[in-house]
Image 1 (spheres, rainbow, N blue to C red):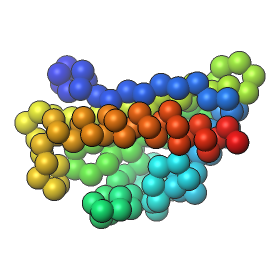
Image 2 (cartoon, rainbow, N blue to C red):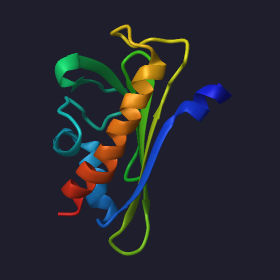
Image 3 (cartoon, rainbow, N blue to C red):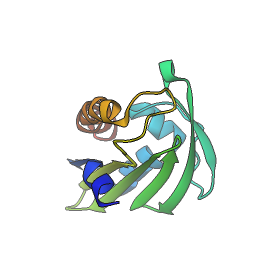
Length: 140
């Protein structure tokens, strides 16, 4: 388990937006679509939804944790877990942490790609999404 924890992708950013606005961006299907990708997400524990991942088709997901406006987790595909953590800072600022876990060097994705390869691609993708797309959406 420890090794898997070391492999998690973790991105942290301070957003110039109040926590309620950031929460809405990460806990509604409209919000998530605006900075990440379209889905049938609903903020209900146990809700099964689909991420429309473009060329990779539809990914099955399930909401596993919901603590508004601080924490949201869901299972993504067969191995991954995605967690969004929000922390209120100064007036009008929110620290946002994205944690993408479930990486295993011995596993492959549904498409037969090794986790080790996809993790590198995802890490770069999250870098751009968290540092560019999310702020562009919530700080406007």
